Image (cartoon, rainbow, N blue to C red; front, side):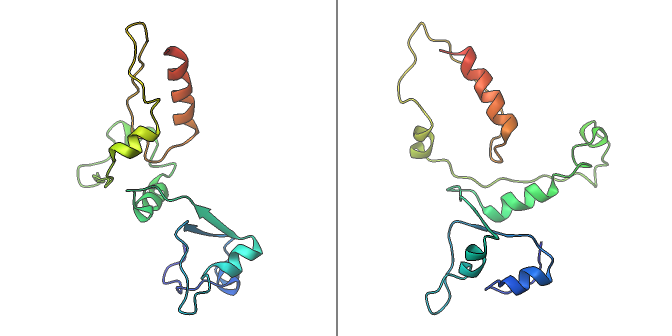
Length: 142
């Protein structure tokens, strides 16, 4: 992470920070002249663009990803090894619309003969483990 970075990141800035790439959401900013702020990085192949998710703050998402360290997932943290002053609660701000939910549905009601499988979980930081779980659930249903 490069703190206090200029609005218009250049290759020189990236090299000075010894960074391999720059990451930005797909809402690409432009400068006062209308030129893309990240064009130089994109043309050099060092820009990674992340698709934005409607209703989810990219800043919050990246912050939570940075918190996921090996220590964060260690057994001592999972079994209550943290003291009450060390625990924190993160609120997630997401507005799920009916339209967004419908995009992921088959848009048909189940028949009496169908097997419906429900999966509990938080999928705001979707990963390969989530995909595997959903594939298994799909195989169990009709």
